[in-house]
Image 1: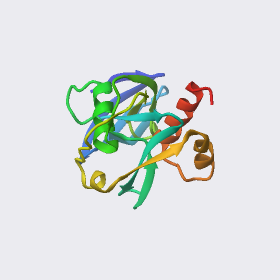
Image 2 (image 1 turned 135 degrees about the vertical axis):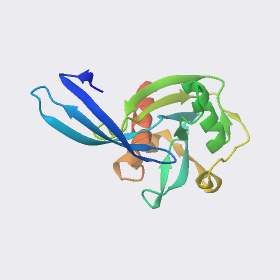
Image 3 (image 1 turned 120 degrees about the horizontal axis):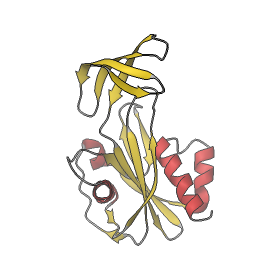
Image 4 (image 1 turned 45 degrees about the vertical axis):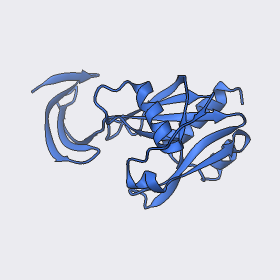
Length: 184
């Protein structure tokens, strides 16, 4: 298998090393523009969605345990694309209901980004929501069963990012883009 990738690089092979619950680890071989051999560990991820849910002068966040960090994180309601064929907007609404117990009749695409392109293909799409309506939360993981929903004043967001209270990448990016959209 040899396929052109980009910028004169070509993938020559890819071997599955481990298939996990959320991600798969591959060893990928490439050839550089000058014929160099490159071997890289590559994580394949199904992608994710997140929602900046704004209610008046507040944004709705969730605080939940993250096993990789062995800590709780304050983040946007979010989740992976784990329903085959589900449109991004539907996945975002599903996650908003599951985690925050809220729904939004309309979601606006806000930003999409690659979380860590140096080793992972995960792409996150963040949506902006207002006109929130109450819904029944539907926790589907142990972490979601114990998460808490927190409302943060929009005026406090910059300070919470600056002081390290909010460090989750999708949350930092989503909140900053939402504040920009709101002219704040």
